[in-house]
Amino acid sequence: MEGKIPEASIKCEARRTFLALCSPKTRLLHEPVSDPYLVCGHPNPAGLGDAGRFSQMGSWGQSSVLFPKLETYRTADKCGRAPYGGAEYGVPQTPEADAVCRKIAALHRGHGAVICPSGLSAIATTLDAFSPKAVLIPDNVYGPMLRFLNRRRIKPIRYPAGASADEFRSALLKARSEYSLREDLLVYIEAPGSGTFEIPDIDGMIAIAQNAKLRTVMDNTWASHVRFQPLERGIDIVVQATTKYEGGYGDTPSGIVIAKHPQDLQIIADELRATGNGAVAPMTCSRLYHRIDSTEERLNQHAHTAQRLIEWFLKQPFVTDVLSPTLETSPYHERFQRYFGKGNGLFSVVFPPDLPAKQVEAFVDALNLFWVAESWGGHLSLVLPVHAKREVTPLPDGYILRFHAGLEDYQDLLRDLNQAAGCL
Ligand SMILES: *Cc1c(COP(=O)(O)O)cnc(C)c1O
Picture 1 (spheres, rainbow, N blue to C red):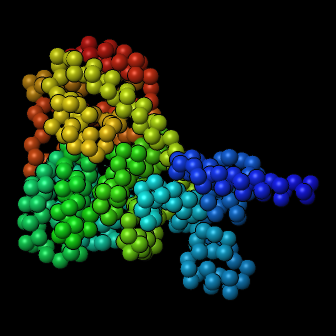
Picture 2 (picture 1 turned 180 degrees about the vertical axis):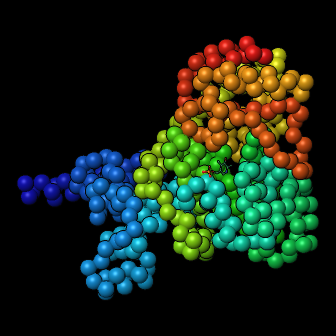
């Protein structure tokens, strides 16, 4: 019996050496279980990262972390970590949260990451951490972001959806005349933008922002780490609603902030510590940790199904336009190919301005597989009207519906669309 363990340890060592030569994807898949003795042979331990060391069940989320003596408590207090791993206080940054943050930071080649309870709270945490007076935002920014800026009295300065470098430069110059200090102005990019999916000249904007020495933040929720790595292109901070494609089933409400520079990460981590907004259930983190590995396969399936649905819509007489940068006819197709290469499950359909809203809504209500719902990125197909408030970029005329293609068999989705089209 005793001889068995060293032998097994040798095998673990060999496995680790082998894994070190594998692709990042394979390494991330095997990382938590390269030594089966640590996890009792369970490939999916509930406790990830350091949690495995102090509880095979994972930390579940608990407030008190126990110390035998004042002295051990004081040692932990200095660095914020308990001798068992994890934090000295159990509510924020559990070992599971640490594990998922390390994984996603590695995928983005960032210095590090923090996790928040939602995508919106990841955005809010980032903005609160740097507290600018004004933010340059795209006209097609995620709606709740505007509500947040308004609430914090941060001035939104809009540049056009799908801005060219010149359009962005003139918005920036105007903003700089009023906000000349670096700390007062932040550059925010979201691409493709919400609802209508315009894509700006991201590389051009980054160059202009860097020239002006401004901090850049990008909401990368549409793309996820699979389709786009903003830090590699020169962005300073990435926010992602991991509620969407990383989690994939709508059961991982969370958001991640990934920073390229250590000093930015520290400022964001300090903000989380000050507000307590970093408390995310260990179960959510464990789910996310594993789902990240299949994001690419799921995204490809969402994208494949979306293309089949788009083809169907383009053939219908009651459709004016389909908004998707994946289409060769899209004015953003060239940028789409340069930055993202492949699509996801999202696209919007524009109906003729003279088609009564009632009829479009009857079509939506006749659908069986598409649920009317907010959020997206999960296994179920969804539909929702687009009500965007644009100030500098006109919206297409007519009723607009945003669709999200789920993981259902696309033939079933097509049958559903065909039967509902009887209303139109
Ligand atoms: C959904 C979404 C968010 C917010 O995510 P939640 O987890 O729902 O708060 C942020 N940005 C974009 C682009 C989104 O689509």
